[in-house]
Length: 191
Ligand SMILES: C[S@@+](CC[C@H](N)C(=O)[O-])C[C@H]1O[C@@H](n2cnc3c(N)ncnc32)[C@H](O)[C@@H]1O
Image 1: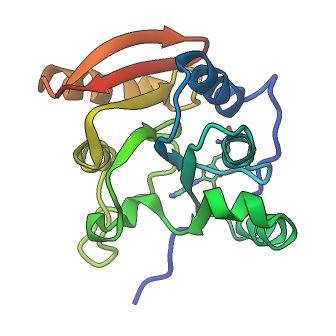
Image 2: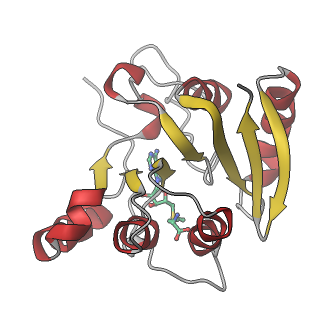
Image 3: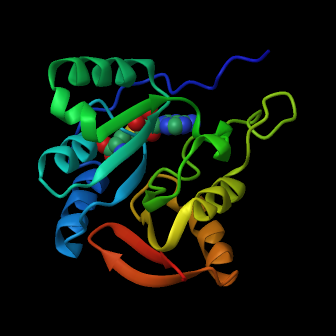
């Protein structure tokens, strides 16, 4: 059995360098989204999306992945200290490329901010059992409810690789481009 492809780092909030999570919270506020189930790719140590959505009385709930042991430790610390946050925000540890759709519900909003940033050479091999970035996007599109939103981060360090995948995906006709909000690119799944 192969080892999981960990993300061997911890990412603290630095809005100058990587504002996507803060911009996402701004977008949710602007859209006045309430009682939505959000899937978030990449918690960071700061959990700013999970915490903000848990405490802003929106009724929104967040399910988020991290592939970093250190970041997951910060979630354990957070949820053990703040029960109300853990009621509305669930972070889990795993490699998103190993996602098994049977384990996930359907979401109202999905963030794909770090598409193409962390793909390893062995990810889509038979022995590892993962998917490539295009298939990952298809999988999460299938897990997005009709009328739900899928968002990308235009300043991602891998956006030059993610962009052609996004354009090809858009051409399949399942989604409609809504437009840009700050550093984010927003699509909506057709009904
Ligand atoms: C650069 S950090 C950004 C964190 C946060 N979104 C932000 O902008 O502040 C990248 C995030 O992606 C997560 N990550 C990296 N590779 C991953 C993978 N294969 N599966 C799931 N999450 C992964 C890391 O754990 C980390 O939370």
